[in-house]
Length: 76
Image 1 (cartoon, helix red, strand yellow):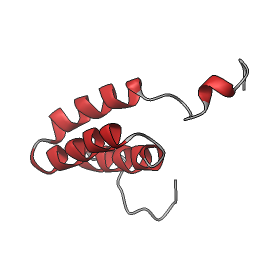
Image 2: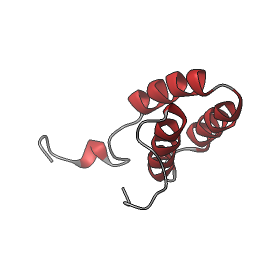
Image 3: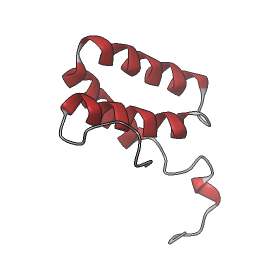
């Protein structure tokens, strides 16, 4: 994370913003359905950050660590 990201680690909204930004980096390589799900979470974050955070947790838990994880040996 950049030191000048202007997000305060102590604010719940900034924590959600940072997590959404990090998830966005992973979503670029996923299917259109997964991308739509992520966009819906981003939209929800504008109205209900608490629910958006819970949905983001579930979304990230469903994501593979890497789009090519099946090709990697264990431990890579």
